[in-house]
Image (tube, rainbow, N blue to C red):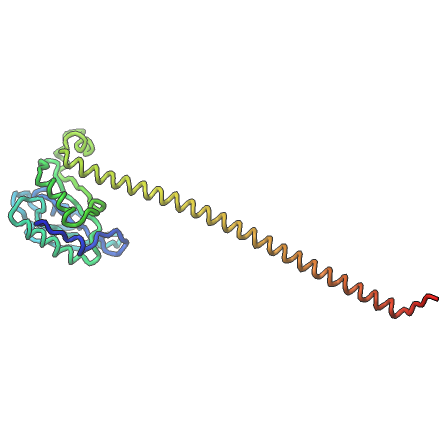
Length: 250
């Protein structure tokens, strides 16, 4: 925070390394710590619905899922909170990121359906790009808590389409556009790989056909050479026979 940029010193990653590291950010009271506890499957982060932040410093916790996947979860101070300690919060986040040796695989932005989205949240989302670099959008996942506050029959898409503040709509649209772009790239890559596979098969068939033709030509050439050699031997024997017969014409 504080106008500084740290994204040159660390890495957002989509690698398939063993441990996956998730960074939690959000305003105090949105359920950020509770979300982290849900991911870990146990209560390790302090979670209370109060106005003052329970998380004063970055906390790093790990777990192993049932499938053997190792997951690291970083709970941060209220990044979206307007306070004089914003520079300290930024330093705490950077310090905790340094503990994530394999980089950050996802950034969970925890928002609440029941809380008003203000300019503070909008500025905080934009500050994430300043702090971590523009590519953070590619790794950002918005998590909405307090789904019970939605009206009966109302879905999250309804909320995002009608009641969601414009700045938040813009951010979620950007993330959806990024997701769609990734899907398009994945689809294009799949088609490209299929085309390459077909081309490789065609080249293999042509190579096999050429080898077969060369083999047939070599066999025909060998057969022709054998026949010529045999014919020469017959001619030689015939000449020798005529010489031995001693035929004289008077």
